[in-house]
Image (cartoon, rainbow, N blue to C red; front, side, top):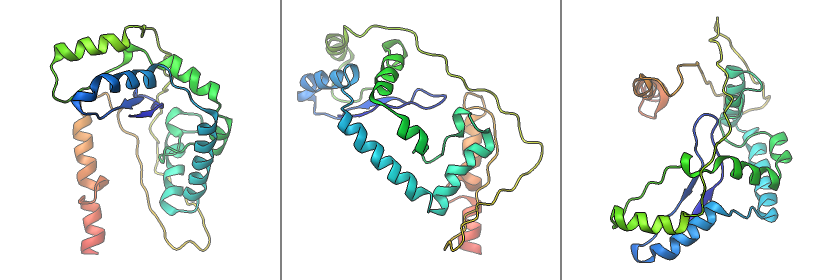
Length: 215
């Protein structure tokens, strides 16, 4: 069982996942429910993960791609916006250093509600049997409200802008272009995704093949 107590800015990406043999489902569900409902957040684990995250941030700041991915969101969305966080997912030194066990506990209590949860199950079990097992382990989990996310709309740039991150002695240069498009909850999301992958968002994209193969 692996628990990832985190959430995205606009999507509820908090996850608790489990893979187990069917004959061991009952004891595994007991453990699964305990992880989901009663996370301990040991201080020693938090200290270790904060140390590792700060080390990762240091590594990102000396890697051309890492630097670009850290800088780009803030340039597109502006300082203070929820989406201005580094695309690497590591956050900032200030946010990591400020995080406490109480913050994690408060986050869990605020966001982990059964009425905002989705359970996906695949395996050798029927819905009837699964429902009975889930009702046994989650009967004490009460629904509730969750905070409203503050995701302000960002106006499109009126002109192209060029930013340079100067790193004397760097062995490589990285060029990244970014543009704001419609939120993911729009009827053209699949079209946007397909266009991005075909144009430059995948290894087999036109831009990549042109630069790596033709040039």
